[in-house]
Length: 303
Image (cartoon, rainbow, N blue to C red):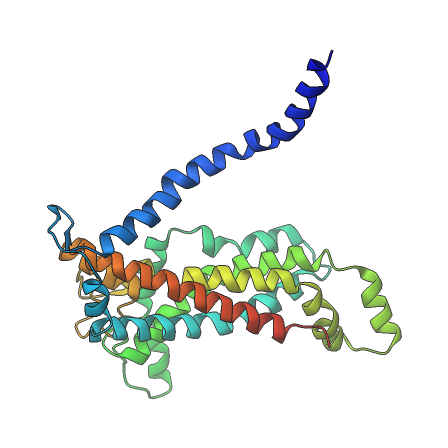
């Protein structure tokens, strides 16, 4: 007699876990296990092809924190990230605000801003490398109209960082603007009407109603953008006119952390050092994302 109620109770409790079990199974195999295994490799002298070469300890981390090339890559990564992320944040907000207004062919405009993101990153890298070419680039051609001598963007640290940052902005600004647009359309219209009755201008309503209303979305994009930005690889790798394998120019002027990891792990087959670098990057991403999350929440908090 009790079999039916007991079975129904077990079904209610167990069925949700069965539905989410595939996710956790995939996460354990492709997420948790590689994370733990990478930590184990980082504590050994590990060759990518030959495997464990013996030894156990923090030698890879000690070498990493005394490696000048690591700090150079860390500076380059942070510099490019900040040059791209700060303007991208405000541009995405502005584009989303424009798209949120009544427009003719609104769907076409909204689709258009997403096109840079769906274009292959290889194509983007090749096009921008040509745009910033010293001898035949369009950017130097325009600068020449104002009497500015051609700039070798790949050869200098500041110019290469700026060029790569524009590539990142071009790819991701439209994507983030559509995320902000979706959040803006969920802000209650009553708030705008109340602000209008109080005499608030459109600009004031945007910063006092719209931005605080989409605060969770801005925080999400800040965290996601931080993680993606600090793992930057494809754009600087394709921007490298020297064709080197992950060095980021002849003087490593735009080598990022991920490029340095690639060089050590797949160029020199030092998997132990590369694993240690990946864990340091992981911690750095977590700290930077948390800082950005707190900063964004404070910046867009309601007055």
